[in-house]
Image (cartoon, rainbow, N blue to C red; front, side):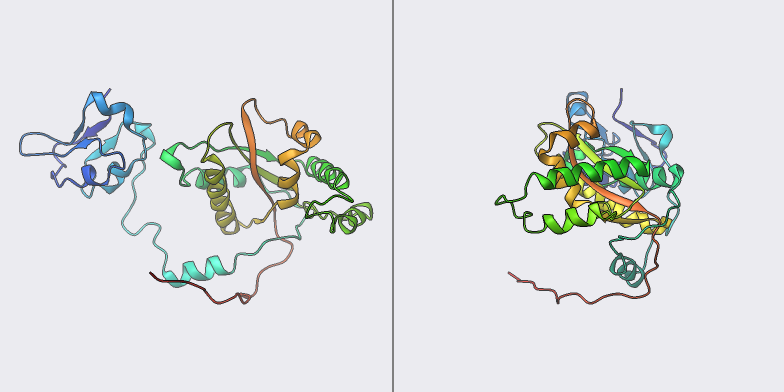
Amino acid sequence: MATLLVNQDLCTRCGICSVVCPVSIIDPADENSLPKVKDARAGMCIRCGHCEVSCPSQALLLNYLPDEKAPLSSGAGTISPEDLGVYLKKRRSVRHFTREPVARETILGILDIARYAASGGNGQPVQWLIVHNPAEVRRLAGLTIDWMKTLQGSSHPMSGYIPTLVAAWEAGADPVCRGAPHLVIAHIPEGNPVATVDALIALTYFDIAAPALGVGTCWAGFLSMAAATYKPLQEALALPEGRNYAYALMFGHPQYKTHGIPRRNPVQVEWR
């Protein structure tokens, strides 16, 4: 099966596809031939699609899910630097949520964006667990509190905060998941040395895309610390065999809107 499908009527033999290929497997076109990937090198293709999307004449089709290729109209997705800067600067960690559930279609829309996040070698190792039931989110938060209790009196960096957090939980508050109705958990294959970073990049895509769809997020640090070692929580998550917890976000509809941009420390940078 050919790796590249080339429309000879559209191909200008510009050579861009060969130049941008991350694994350098595309032989450039010449006067007598079109760009191609030799059969002996086809197995090296990582299906990243750089060749296809970099072709100015739209002459190339990567032969991977070819029916899913979607046209990109001129100017589509263009965002001014000013608008992009404001959008990112106004992003907030949300810790107060409404009771209204986020529709599954909305969540799938955010995940559809997150699946385009960068990953090492285009491995796309990240899979997702959505905890959509608020009662289940509360149960997982309770298990995290149980983990905290095991650290009381220890040398763990969290130990000094635990009495306050446990007291808040026992008073009816949720210092772990902040009453969020949902969790998105990224999980990765065991033994993949770069997949943890891939998961964080994908979760960042989720985090950035969510506000555009009316969804607020917060990184679930306490839950993630507990999930790294606490067996009862790991068993409750029941991830597929051979998959490891990477990190999670709590999310839901924000109870309050953002009306400004807070201050941050000045950029500190060294030039060399």
